[in-house]
Image 1 (cartoon, helix red, strand yellow):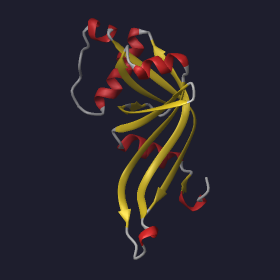
Image 2 (cartoon, helix red, strand yellow):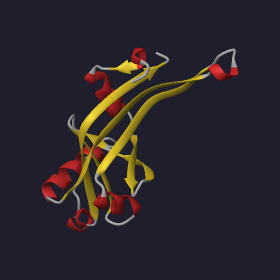
Image 3 (spheres, one colour):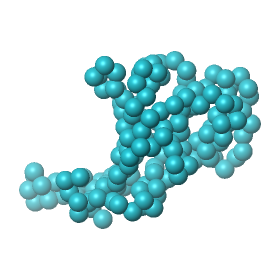
Length: 152
């Protein structure tokens, strides 16, 4: 990281950012063509989970290339300046790299769905088997992760 003074090295602070946001941006590559998509997600302290339909661009790319990059950020704002070129972004951001895999086991899928739903509701839900079958659940094994903050 070029600006070491902005680097977040405390894993607890990185985890707090991941837990406080609701949307992550997932970057993938298909034959050197980038593809980026916003997603709801869940984090268990080790891996990130998201769900999807079984078909679509994202899923087709992940089947061919499971290497991903993700970005999660919070506390966005602008730090104004007297000089036009000196405005800066206020933020806390996490960027990570990992490998995506498809969860096939029904109990594991349900557990991951519970984590995702718990981000938005205190209710406990039962998932109809047909709904679980038509839902893809993806796990990102985090291989590296770093954080950055500015304006705090």
